[in-house]
Image (tube, rainbow, N blue to C red; front, side, top):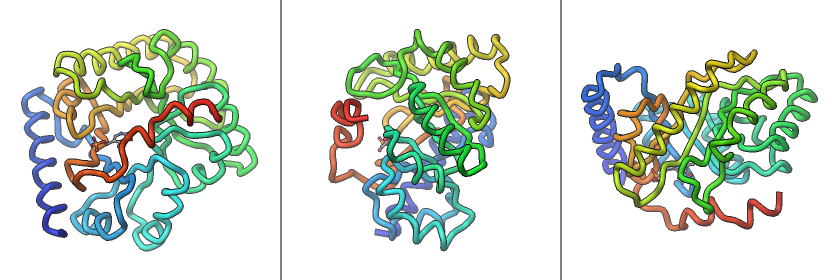
Length: 247
Ligand SMILES: *Cc1c(COP(=O)(O)O)cnc(C)c1O
């Protein structure tokens, strides 16, 4: 089992390097974040021992379950990549370095509130639904500029860039279109020069499409299955419609 995670990691790293070469980018400019939903601690330990330091969780509850690892390995940086309900903000800001999935003003307000209480700041990305699929979270592309402007008023939030999930099970052209759109939105926002908005980070690309994402300018790719194997829960469980409503 251990060997498998290591071998998978090695091949993902090689593919990343090839994609960087092919698109004239430096490999240091693209980070690998391991998406760890449903993955048991033993497998995560193997990845850490193989040198990985960036992990992303989708649910506050599972994040808390990874606490033993957080104490044991302080070189590891935890990110939050899932749909964040406002009532879970407290747990999440305690443990993560970057939240990839800020997609609405209300969530920004809730974060700001909590961060003020704790007298700290938080790095965030704004999630955009570039595929316009109902089943995914993220602000509509047309609303991105306004949302970033509104979020930039909260002095506790450092807006570092954008995140998207490309269209799944689609052709390379369709996914490429999603990633290009994110890059265009990034450019539009940069022109505005909003205070405390940096826009250097583009979190895009997963197991099935990270090569295309790197070609289109990803600076963080989020990979689960290619490293840890198939998950026993469908992604619907993490990206479902009900979660959207009860927030
Ligand atoms: C699960 C997940 C990933 C990784 O997906 P894989 O296809 O397993 O690589 C990336 N981003 C988000 C938001 C996820 O929930």
